[in-house]
Image (cartoon, rainbow, N blue to C red; front, side, top):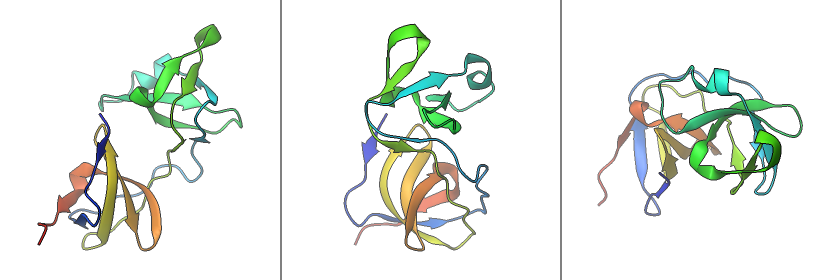
Length: 125
């Protein structure tokens, strides 16, 4: 479920995390993607479907951000990029929104996904 953080919410990275894919799927609202039921069954994180986009790039896509379309494909209902950060313990992140165990965050000036398990939200003043 999509959750939007209040503006200015920050977190500290509490464990190192390596980005698993260098150039994953990135799609726009309305694009059709092809789900892979076999690959999707391999994850233990609920809410994500492995999809291939129109340009052939693939990656984990939020299931809640898709709608059924013709011939087994899914239509994206939001813009989405599966790009993830490589982060190190002690990095600081500005949090934007979260979805199914991952947070879209800005770290060192760029935005990408970070697993919520490696973040400790900082108290608001």
